Length: 293
View (tube, rainbow, N blue to C red):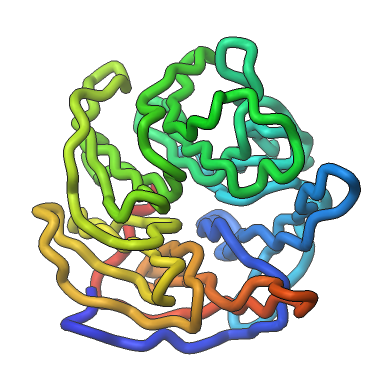
């Protein structure tokens, strides 16, 4: 973890919008989502999954994935994705990249635009559903944005009172769920029960513009802030330990590398006023490994 404040190194920029990095230990590569500007009458953003191989090789891995946040199942055989193109959570079987459905709706109503997700030790999927990529499609959630879990193909609502929930992570022991409220200025936590359900919500820390998040093996939280271009590092107690700077408008973060001690960060400037977005992938070496799940 950073002693106070460190700066990440840019690997490459020139991407329209990057999100959702996740390390694939089987191939020793980083998977991440590349989103382009919205198209058509619904203005939905198309996206692909890229594969990054050190030191500087980027290839398209899944075309037309429609993805934002990404996660791997515990066995590493399936890529899970928050897929705003179909307003769903999807699975991609890695050997052949065939697409499946994890969650398509809640009580018959389409989600807004699932954004980020994580997987518990028992396979429970937790995901956030802000409305950032809903675009011009009809709101079926009555203006609410939510946090959900999926277990045994059943979708359950955790919370629909947080405005624009975004990054989501579990503690290494799987007993605490964290969610950043992008529109509330708060990071929240819940105790997780043995069946994957959660207890009462409480405030964990204050931060404006919470975006993606990850955890290290010591249980420290690495929370991206879209507002200030930094990763804010918190101890499990909620005390801030330091920051990591990486460009502007930081969107997400993930540990990787052979020893798990490289922190990868997606950050940049989005499309505005006819200007093309310019996002990059950054890296920084830390002295603690990330939690691999």
